[in-house]
Length: 347
Ligand code: 5GP
Ligand code: MN
Figure 1: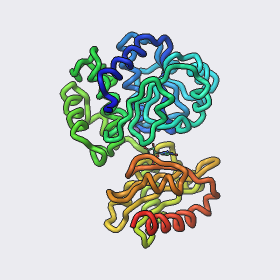
Figure 2: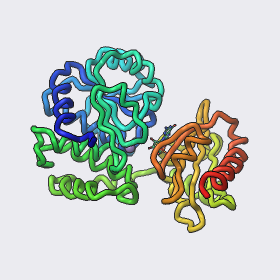
Figure 3: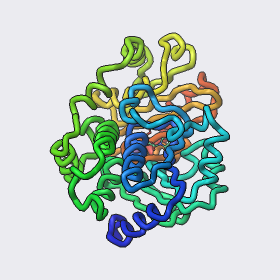
Figure 4: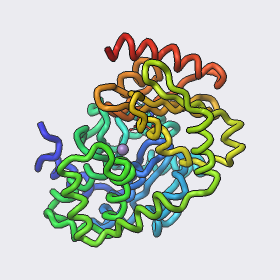
């Protein structure tokens, strides 16, 4: 049954109305959609009178997303990295936790134990495969949608307070939704459905400044970020005979190019512009693990490859995972396992 039905919307609104200390959480290393959907929910809850709603993040989001959270006071937007005790108390002291943009608790990293311990009623709103529905009182899970931000929008629009009029959504929530959808679709480059364009149209009509969003997302990065991209595409990118492009970025190069969190966002998409490339993998050395990003073209499954060989998952053509290997062994691992994957699973 479709999740966005009147019964679920009513349950959602009832739980919100009853909540005393609502908390919003999203996945670790939050991206535009995670921040966009969280901030939209924050402003919506405030509109319904929940003045003490808080967003608790595992860690900071990239600076270029600051425009989305503008105006939210520090005590309402906390990261566990900087304020572990306050974050823990907020989650354990909450009676309603709204979980956005992740399918499993472990995607919240260090927030996971708090979520497991919490006795709060929980609501899930997410667009990934295989959500842990049994952990939630109400779940809105939809994979054929652009983003969690769009799912949040669809829910808002069906509530009595908004009643199908996008103009009634708080302006800051509308901006956050448009920004989240724009980053998750790569500016209408993927996962765009009729509903996505309808939403964009309705939000534009409601006054959202899309030009400002695009400027913030695309035109305010550092010089070293673009130099790093050039270096990666010129010197690091390799292409296997199976049509897999990969780039392995070690810590040394990250320091050399003064890499900031979020700087490499989207780089993994670039090799897909090459005709013979079916799948692109980006491996980045981090403390304790190697993060993996995978993108694939239609007909090749990034999700399956991530699940089988990279301890992860995600969406059909955009997935991620991790490896616990020294960085100098990652290239060989990728070569070997993508060869197995492309020849045995993707024939
Ligand atoms: P990204 O490459 O942008 O980090 O992630 C792409 C997609 O894969 C995201 O939608 C994300 O939710 C999913 N993903 C990233 N890392 C993991 C992971 O470790 N496990 C799972 N299950 N999904 C992941
Ligand atoms: Mn998302």
